[in-house]
Image (cartoon, rainbow, N blue to C red; front, side, top):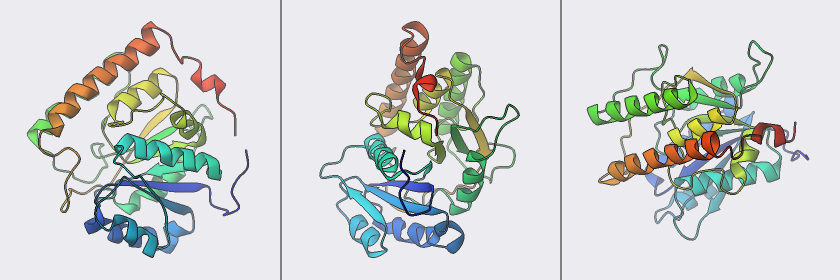
Length: 262
């Protein structure tokens, strides 16, 4: 595999849909020397009707703009394809709404490059809101129930306890990005607990670290209105489909062996 001649092995992917109110402040923070020296930034503009595209270009960051709104998952997957084509070794994905503090970038990046007790590098590093050393994060009663439900489902099917099963703040190794970039390996709408379940069942190495996150203060969440109800049903069926495909039908069970070694 050929590495792009930018001398940086980390790409930060930011899916964005009508985030003009928050994305400029986020990009300014990502331009701080301690982050800019190790990472490039790619904004996946999912057909925003506001000035998200103009703001990103004015700050000289790479941006890919969809003609039609394709959804959060599709935006990420196209970002993964970009990362593979450009030869990045690691990806960190974060939201454009300001909830994911940029102070998490360095710890996630360092964790991706740290071997475990068995001498293996992690494939996925989850930034968790709910670990012992995480910054305080307030959630509604309904979300607490949903998170508890997904934690239990993941534990039942994989044997792993994941404290934050819906975190969008994630660091990915090159082989994870390659796997996700391929057809039918990634949810095009809501890649959350279903993808964590999938990757654990396939044998990818998933670790969690404490993260600093903030509540959204501007703009509209993709889980606003009736969307959380749709999300819950879609996520349940998606998790069960993942379990059926991998544990019952034994599909993709050799995925980790088929990926090229860096």
